[in-house]
Every structure is written in C-alpha cells, then in structure tokens.
Image (tube, rainbow, N blue to C red; front, side, top):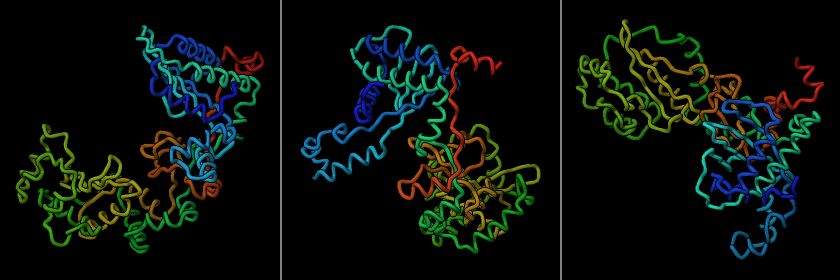
Length: 418
C-alpha cells in the first residue's frame, strides 16, 4: 500500500468529492483500473454493487499538519490544544473507510467514506483537467492489499477483530442504555409519572389488534377539534385551558388542513362530504402536533360501516410521552381510539425495547431497513461518552462477509462450492 496517512487521504477525498465527474484522462484510466481490480469481488447488491473496507494509518501529529499554521490561523492557542485537535479528529491509530462501487445506466459511481469521489460516464465529458489520480492510485493499492488478504482467507477475520464498533450495526436494550446514561431516561420520561406509565401499559394490553371496538355515530370538525384540545391540554400546551379548540388546532397543527377549518363545526354531513371527497388531497389535516417527517403526532378520523373512530400515531422517542398523554386523555373521555405502535410505545416507556445502533455517518432516522428484524422505534449512533460501556452492553450483528467472485476463487474453494 502507498504511504499516505489518513489526514492526507481525507484531503484527497475532499478534493475529489468537489468534482466527482472524471473527465481527466489520467484519473479516468486509474479509476477504470480500480474497477478492474474490484472485478475480483462478488457483487453484493443491486446495480452491481461492491463493498470493501479499507484502512489508513493516522500517522504522527506532523502528518496532521504544521502547528505554526494552525496557530497563525487562530485554530489553536498552544501545542496542547494542537495535540487535542489531532486526537479529536484522529482518536485511533487507524482510520477506516468503506469503498462502494455501483454501475447504473452504464455510469460508474465510486463512493469512499461518506462521499461520492468518482463518476465515469460512457460518453466523453468536457475536460476540466481535475487530476485526482493520486486518490485513485491509493484506492487501487489498498484494494489490491485487501483482496490479497481475502484470497489468503484472513480479510473477514481481520474485519471482525479490528473494524471499530462505530462502523457497525447493533442494538441495545433501552433499560441498559438508561442504566449507562440515566440522564437520557430522565429527559425521555419528563412529563409522565411512573403511575401513568403503568396505567398506559395496562390500557394498551387490552387494545384490539386493528381498531377500537366502539364507534361514534357521527363526526364533525368541531368534535375533532375538541379531541385535539384534550391532547393539547394533557400535554400542557400554551393556552390549552383558555383558547378554543379551533384556535388550539390552528396554533399547533401543521397548517395544511385541506379545508378542514372552513367546515361548519356543527355539521356532520359537511364533515362526511369533505372526508369522502377524493379530489381533496395533498394537505396534512391530521398532523395535529406539527413536527418533522418522523417527529410529528397525527390524529386521524376514520370511518367504516359501523361509524366513526379515531387513531393516533406518534412513536418517535422525542414525542412518545406526548403521544401517550394524548392517547390516555382520549381514553379517559371515552372516545374510541386506536394507538399505532401501542405495544412498542409501552415497551419504550418501560425500557423493554431495543434501540438500533447505526454506524457513524448514518442519520439515526428511518433506519428500520438496515436491520434484519423490524419494529425498532428508536435509533442512535454510538455516543461520545461512556462509549465502551455501551459497546459492552450492546448486541452486535455479524459483519456482512466480503466474498471473492467465483472466477477468482482458489481451485479448492471452487470445488467446495459445487
């Protein structure tokens, strides 16, 4: 492998990611040579996807940069701060990167770390003469070394023994995480008492599988707003005790109400016509506690041949207590309501569920597809503090095994796979 240390490699990645399209002839020939080298690997996903973990030494502090330059730029004020900065960016002797290549519509894409660094189109591109061949050459050298280890049968074992846990997929029992980080539990359960949690757990244990058994004979916008007001009051929203139900909905809902606010609040017929009007779409009338795509709370009106009922959704950990308070307020007033992910929320509030741990660089939202089992309501990256305790308490999934393409297997391996 070429003698490039992680700080220099990161500079090369940053430069290449700023101009990923590869018109430069020198760089293009190197990238094509890299793709030829990677033909030794088995495809592991759609679009001819191939993956390979590579690593680079962090080197000495001199490889990180010159102290005088950092001092002059005002980034540090002493050699001690310079040392701390180096160790902050490169805390371990080795830095790991994932190389991913895919081919889609005859275009080759090379991702390294978290960045798209090379993009090669079949047709000629305008030549901007951006020479990123040094990075491509390093990738060839590092990939060849990794493939040699793979051919020797030691690469995957090396990954198991050395790949940092911050690059891996795992899960931790929420109660174990609370034990390690008690302030996280305190912040999560603020706004609900242990007695209320237990009452909720008992209530959700009796919830039918798909919908409540009871029904309302009719629904109006006014009644819907009153149901919302119960939730706002249970969570002590501003002006919950003084403002009208409609005013509270206007203040706290998403705002894209699809005409719900224009309806006669007393008219069941008008609400029914609005509800069943298929030409009305695109708004968010049910997003009664606004938030992000995964952090809002929705209260839905539902209708079937038996009548009307409500359903409530809001299972992100940051809104879980609000959602449970909202649900119990409706239950206490006798409204027929179904809580989505009710059992999962009960486990969350008692610490009995698992938090999915995703690798650094992965935003801990919408990550259910990364895990072999479904049902996680919360995700996290490894924390900066108490990291070793979390690693020890977590369960870690096996690393995906990197395999050689069948044409590149040693003869003994080819025979064993027949």
